[in-house]
Image (cartoon, rainbow, N blue to C red; front, side, top):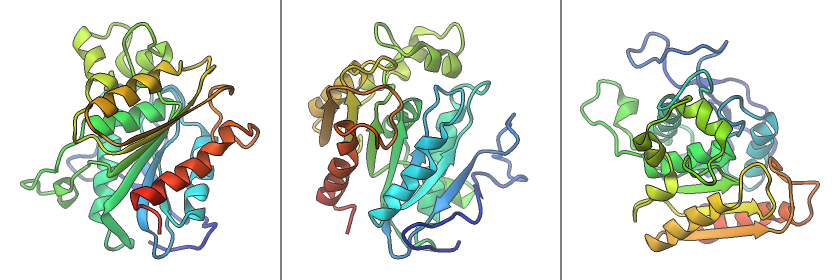
Length: 274
């Protein structure tokens, strides 16, 4: 895998599963689930980036530009092209789990420390990142696929105006329908309302949102931060007064645009930068 400098151009994609693998999933898109790598030499840390899009699509402005920003901090990034509708749960989660395992499996080869791998997500991609943070496992040491033996636990998470709950009164109806269908069971709703799934082993998390987000109410972030605090998990929460949903890097919003600097400081304090 080629390395690059501060503004790398990805030269390839990394399939999550080899086509002839017994674990290769069914998919309906033109290209199977994959990672687009933005690897920085001597980075040590890496982040899997999950763009948002309501589990219906993946927003371009929440993918490659975020990888370039992470590269500017000296962090390698891999943009995850996970399955979306008509695919349903657990397929997006399966893709995220596989992505973390794959990066950890190749960490030495790619110059990454296996205990410095995080996940970042926007909106529905934030839900996917939070779901992985609360639905991870330590790997299957008996699997014949060596990638499956790696843990899929993120070492840290960055959630940007995330969808968190699938339950009333704040559920994002579009994400819920695309992920769980028209008639999800109460168990499904509870299982994927991530504020109910936090434990003391959920990774340290940075969260930001805007107070007047009309797409995904700020209560999603508030409830998740409360659950993290109650479980003793380090959390940094930033709520900015104004800003539409889907801001991405928020370059046109001086208030919310502070999130990148705040996040960089948090990553440094957590030991994932430098």
